[in-house]
Image 1 (cartoon, rainbow, N blue to C red):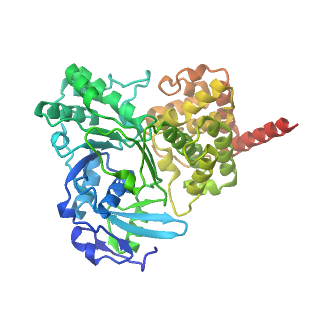
Image 2: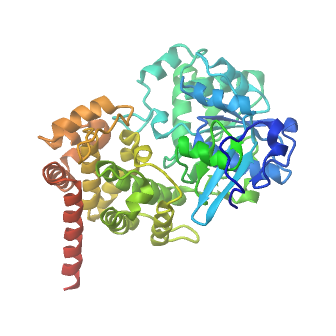
Image 3: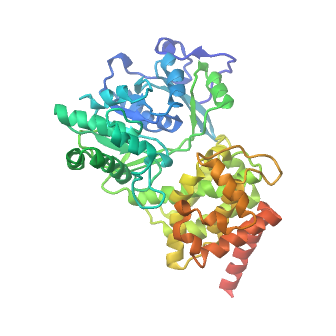
Amino acid sequence: MAAASLHTKGLALSDAVLPQLSEAVARPNYDRAKLRPGIVHIGLGNFHRAHQAWYIHRLMQQGMAQDWAIIGAGVRPQDKIMRARLQPQDYLTTLVELSPQGKSAEIIGSMIDYLPIEDGNAALIRQMAAPAIRIVSLTITEGGYFISPTEDGFDIAHPDIQHDIRHPEHPRTVFGAMVAALAARRASGVGPFTVLSCDNLRGNGSIARQAITSLAHHIDPALAEWIEDNCSFPNSMVDCIVPATGPNELALARDFGVEDAAPVTHESYRQWVIEDDFCAGRPELEKVGVIVARDVHAYEAMKIRILNAGHQVLANVGELLSVETIAECMAHPMISRFFHTIEHKEIAPYVSPVPGMTPTEYVGLVAQRFSNPEIRDTTRRVAFDGSSRHPQFILPIVRDALNSGGSIQGLALVEALWARMCAGVRDDGTTIEENDPDWPRLSKVARQSAQRPTAWLEQQHIYGDLADDPVFAPAFCRWLRMIWSEGSLASLHSYLEQEQDTETEAWK
């Protein structure tokens, strides 16, 4: 449904103005004043509001889940900004769906509060300890789980984690706050809650379990045992392309007559697969299209490897070639061929099918979604935090390919393009602004690797033993030298010619 008319200024979003909005805008049909909380969600950004909050809203529209309303929360100082935007509009959000066939808008009302962000996280701990809260969900990004840079586990040595061990009553971290809340629930007899990770990590529930129980063990071993025995940590897979909000997105909400300080645009596709493991009950999510399964690993692997890794295939070279959005990358003949070749030859072979979808079919679906010109998902947003995303999305595929004797030439080129991007200068000489929590160090190493490519691979916390691999390391070094000497586009052309020659030889 398209907007009925254009507005230079819309109605300031709040409960009071909902009846006054255009009929073109869908809105809650339930009484928000009667909603009761059941979920605390930590890390309340655009994705959560377009995904989990939307599914809960859809249940509420059907008269269900009235006691599963969401209370937003955060532990970072910058989370205060989102709270300040949402509080004056009664925590409502305008969702604008961007389909190639047109735009539509709806107001979702499943969130009813947003806790203050404060040192020590007292308000968050109190709310999570409340009997009504049965699920604590997370979208804190892949880098928020304190995964050890040198070991396959939780980074107990991180300064913020060490602070929480010494001061468990005034924690800094998400996991410290959850441990404190669970300690209070255990002491009061309220019982456990489910920890539901919605981040793009394979085995995200298992990773959240490890983080919480490891921290709890260093604070109170008996509490850690209680958490392990009573709490549940379902794995999940989430999927929806949700761009960042900027002036264009604010204007889109105004086109529907809504003045929203934090609207969200999204594609016309969503998927959510959750392991059916909830210790304190859950909403009936299967009634609004969520797949509730015994095992989500195959779904996770398909999405993380084909979509999330595919994003990294596009974003880094897109930045280097000054291509602003993912859709524009897919419209670029050379970048698009690069994407399709790597997906079919070097990624899909290491993905298992799921019910109703083969890896090849999923590549086609993802390519179609990435190509949607209505979604202005910037290469900058997708390339953000590569130091977390490449180890999670790209390098596990490299390892599987090496173990199977498969080709890694394209993936080695992806890593070389990331290294070149982190030098902070595009092929046309323009500056790439900081785009990683570890940007200063990455940029320094990237500049060193222009002369000595192995310097990039010597980042042990990212590449581990791949720096010494006799297949991957030489391929990476060759590509990085070529990118610096001949440019990104010439390197793509060389890779694609090489793959075409390989196919020709195979048919002889």
